[in-house]
Image 1 (cartoon, rainbow, N blue to C red):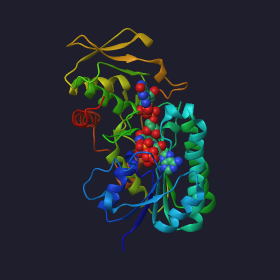
Image 2: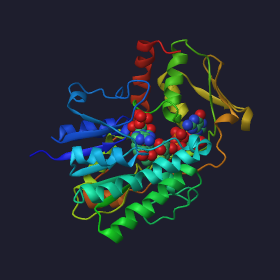
Image 3: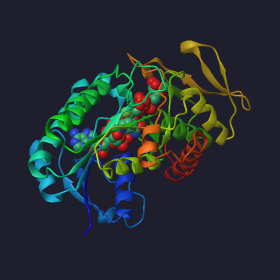
Image 4: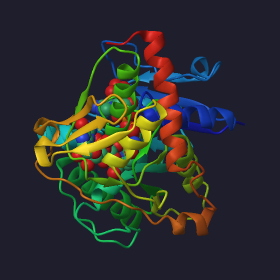
Length: 343
Ligand code: NAP
Ligand code: G4F
């Protein structure tokens, strides 16, 4: 009999890749979908996969809907990916971060303990929980979050992952994932914002775009590599927590330079602070400006993960290098903008 997986956040970047991955492994896949004004399933790209997913309407803010979804799906494995996942927005809407990213996890694990206590649970934790801790960060590093998003995720990790594992013997794992990107990444996140903006400039649809902190360093991997690690964690004999990362760190500035190369631009930086500009040496045109509106009240300066535990325990290692990730996103957006004639 096929195994059954229940995914919250199935309409997001990771949810869509994970659902496709699990269908490929023969799972029956159920997904919690909240009502939105546009087509929520827009990210599903692999032919023949979307029709196989069983959608259950619900919301992480609504216990009754979660209970119903678990009763319908009767999962062997639960992947909790639903979140308000935008760190910058969490400063503006802190209650939503706490409602969905902390209380939502509580609703899910408490309902799971009643409805399907044997189910194994994956919780989408995050490198943002390390906050101010110096890199490289691993499972033993100090958590010092600086954003409402990071604090809500850390509280969920402490109360419902390590807490419920110790107190109730629940099979629940935290995947402490570092930034992972793809052509399906939301357009507000910095990598996708860069590739889509450069694609629009290339097609003559805009002249320049604006970023915030150019010096922040992130450990960027490819989302498709990372969803496999989520599944691997749940196949182990014992529940545990794992850092998933590439081990490489790059600045936002470096990401922009690398992407610009793909579009035939050669960025040099002039000015400093809020006056800094990225100028294409070839055309002498300003392509990137700094806009303080994109700066955060508190910033995580460096993230660089050490995922040697995941490699040792279940043989996971990232497959996609930084330059390949930038290229595949840029390639996608060059075509995407052309096709959609986005403005
Ligand atoms: P994403 O693309 O923003 O997807 C978030 C998902 O959560 C969407 O399906 C969204 O549904 C859903 N959601 C939000 N609020 C909800 C609610 N109240 N009820 C039900 N569903 C709700 O995020 P992602 O990049 O795939 O990330 C997946 C998970 O991993 C998140 O928990 C994120 O915090 C965590 N994480 C991500 C990264 C990363 O670099 N991508 C790194 C570490 C951890 P709609 O489609 O309706 O908005
Ligand atoms: O792309 P970002 O918004 O991702 P951030 O804040 O690192 O969060 C992502 O990764 C976390 C894992 O560490 C996840 F948990 C979370 O759900 C999300 O997926 O910003 C990356 C960096 C930041 O330092 C930000 O200040 O880029 C900087 N940045 C500079 N200009 C910008 C911009 N970020 C955004 N979103 N937009 C800008 O214009």
